[in-house]
Image 1 (cartoon, rainbow, N blue to C red):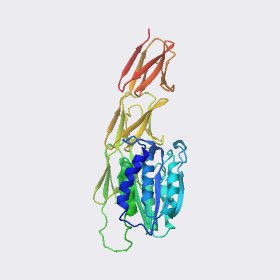
Image 2: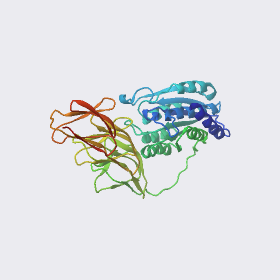
Image 3: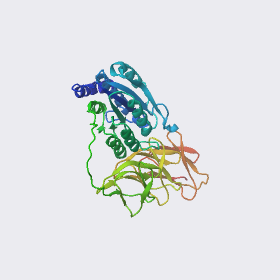
Image 4: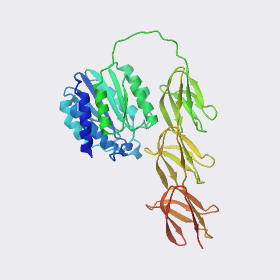
Length: 424
């Protein structure tokens, strides 16, 4: 599978780079090896294997005189460690002809597993390339948004202001809407380009294009402009808990969108919008225009009395809770899991503007026994115990066993199914 992807990528990269000389350019290439890169593409290949194929083909066709360094993030610590410093300069700057074999060898050993500390990584890469001759180019490949505290767009803007020769290109590899916003913003403020890629060949082609792009002009031109008009920031289906809005660069609060107040009038600029403990970062508000965020919604039927936590699928960080009369929560377009006692309904993908309704199965026991009935998942994990006046338990679709009448009873439940068990 790897060889097929590599061959297809090589053809596309070769055709792109053949007409472009890379002398006098220094490229800091950054590869995402966070846990989400283990997800599979439609072809069956994992994202990380596709990215490895694209990197191999790219460096194989790069002009020998181009100076290149190779940095990876998310590969040294498991997601549970929440390591926001997880990055390594795998290969330092040197001519492509000298670094090629080292990059290929290092790439093959990469294991995707950790966090996505984009702000930290682009800052290190910009500092690395800033000491090199010629045009300074950073190329970031990522399949997701920042999972740490930093604001990568604000950081990229500051880095570009400090180095007039710096260009940051970003490539979104099967990204969601929120991640695309962030990666587009990084490229825009740092004189670069943003590209979408969906497979190994596509990613290889995009790598070739951004590496061959001419550096931005460094001439200074003064023009007269009108004083900027304010713009509006609107959130569709705003959460009842509200969304705090802060300036991306300063972190200062500028207001809150809550309930019937669905928009704020703001000066043109970049803002972060809170969704629970997470944030939709680097949202651009333009003067005289309305920027509309269209989050997704997770709604739950048959809520358990103990409630259900909504977790970011990749990091496990809690982003909201469904409990009592709060049957839905607004979320960034992304992938989530929802807890049910000791287990979770996994990989719930929510797209922009989508209302994802979860309709769990329900186990109901009618019995005179008062000691309770334990329900276990297929792997033996205790999901919960059915007891008390309301003898029901909501569970994700799947296979379970329940302890009734002194014996284990197997269950195979579909979404929305109600299983009535009468013990006589």
